[in-house]
Length: 305
Image (cartoon, rainbow, N blue to C red; front, side, top):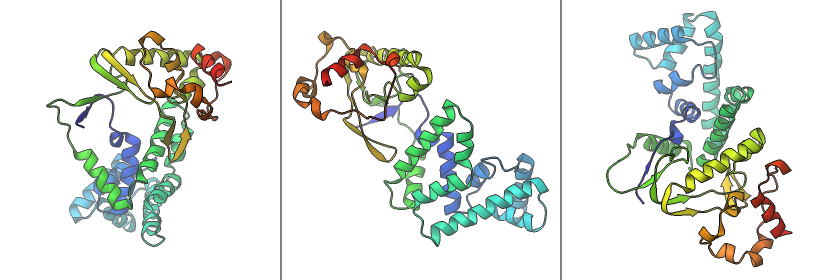
């Protein structure tokens, strides 16, 4: 079905995903200068702008790739001492990772995990304990999960190249895909709202970090999503979901149980819930305290007891 994405950042355009892909691209092809430039000092290795500028000039003068230029400059002792340590570490790591791929035959997923660990990239994100960096780590986990769909590194990189090179066609009738935040102020005849599951919406982190305030923010967002529909809003959830490489059991969002009955047209799952309720078990890893449990949540608990 034709679609267009409105607002937000595409997955492969997120900074942390670009960084991961750049590591893999340079491992796969040492002449990838754009990848080298992006990651040689990411995380910080004291390879600053002036050092990178000198490498660029040396590479251009000697018709070399940036990586080959850096190696030659180190051999000629043309790199400042502080940058020399970081650059040596980076180049030695690159050789080691290529060996892991070609000699040890590490698959592309294992290789990505090794790179994230040995480069210090994961540690750098974990050390900055804030929501933004936690989200970046979550995105990297999703990347690792997505990589399982490809048989090798080359096929994965080909997919990324294609996914990032396609321009959106804004003409014609298409399904508009967007976040609920991006949908504010917009209206559509029909709106599809997937993923209404406990732990996902409301999101577990919102409740853990902000408690009742976080829950209310998520509830207001649910209102925004529903009221974008001029005629019909179709809300759905999964009984189980493939998340970060594993299948997890899911429970319908408490927000569904809070919707006014007279405005709902429920499917057979809800009509037969008296018979099916024993099979409807939620993810026990998701826990909230009494203060963050809505009336809908409490009504559901009474139904299953």
